[in-house]
Length: 290
Length: 290
Image (cartoon, rainbow over all chains, first blue to last red; front, side, top):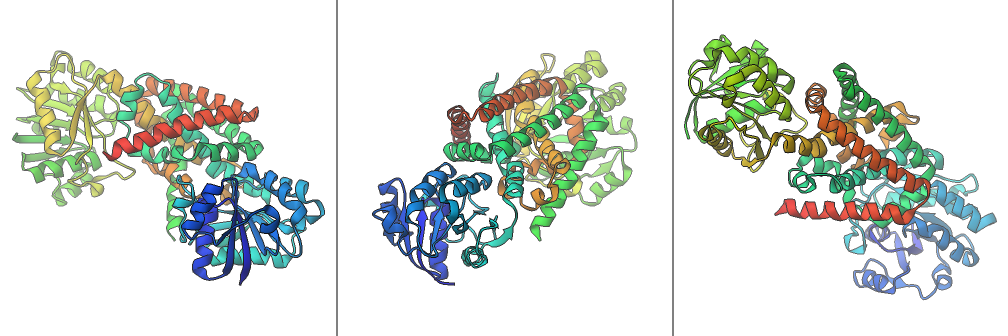
């Protein structure tokens, strides 16, 4: 594949790493950055992550083959509304956000009859770092990129976005936006909420300093994601609010059950839950190593 | 220090690693194992972790300098009752359990006027592995060993147990049993419950397979402790039941607050909780690196 002009809106860890990967793969001729902060874009240009800074949305979008929305997810509707009047020819718009239902809704609202241009995507990579300084060409290598195509998408456009992520080293998978949001509410967004909640609760409790001072490897791993960017996770949680509320409710019911077993000193029941979870986690770990 | 005869009750990861560390440090002349399974003890002997297998509790305890209880914590009262009639001279009894209030109560109940012999201890090491095959001389190196001395303990005996853990490479800290149990309920036992609960909830939910198939690094770290030994954690949770129930209640209240913020789409309130937790976790990480 060859991309003549790629526009990245929001050149941080996610957008910057995609730019570096596509440059390394030699598939993007020109990469143009747009964003809210001119200083950040100049920094990305100085680092060689992008080739140009667009002077306006209109000039950025002229002749663009692909536009990747890589800003925080709360920006997606704003960006799509600003871009809508300037989309021409066969330009494809895609995103890299952690939630898909909201992105799809924003695309229908902002693009209307042009919604066929929008191919929703989510590369599963990141970590607790953020910003263009953390960007690296290998971020997506061996990781998944989930595509949630719309019925309106042209098959050739979906293939084009697939090829872009393949060129960045990712493994492309398809699912519906509804499946995507339920899946990531459960395995990503809820764990972030739970991890933030544990640290917040300890801070408010008695012996808080003694607790933190004596926390070990279990706490370290459990709370690694609590060091994540608060603004980004606020936006992800709000964007995926309905599925996430469902997962929180399911989780609280499970925790309430386990509390009841503990209060009743029902060791057999507790062990059944622990064993089932432990076996599933061991199986999952083995599966991941393959 | 020099230990002429050290008895280890329960030669698994914890007891076996202590034996290997004290052998390597050259401070234990004879290490005798006792336990429920003769096969496990023979395996520990074949691995060179212990020097002898005791034929009876009575013969094990004769002339013992130190007895270390390293079996699952539910065994502590049983072991102390069985040992009580055979304790003689200056023999010190200590343990390595993850909960201290229950161990102290068991010592008072089983040893009565002999409770001065019991020096409660908890080395902070382990991980998701268990069994003597996972034992290693370096397990305690640079890790903490918490001592919760009783008013009845002879200062020289407390010093002796301190020196034993120092010889194994650990850093000794003192706190009360009540502080200990609150601290580890919060930073260790509760995270285990929460991690088991997440995996259990996913197993029972819709798209369970798709969720596990798409779980990434955040899930991996958050649920690493859900692979822990179910029987061991059942016993730890039961042994530390009252403080743990308190921590679960505090956690559910925090989670309920965060759910309310999310349901109300109160991004500012969510971000405040996330930011505070994130900053505390970053600070904690930096402190750990020192």
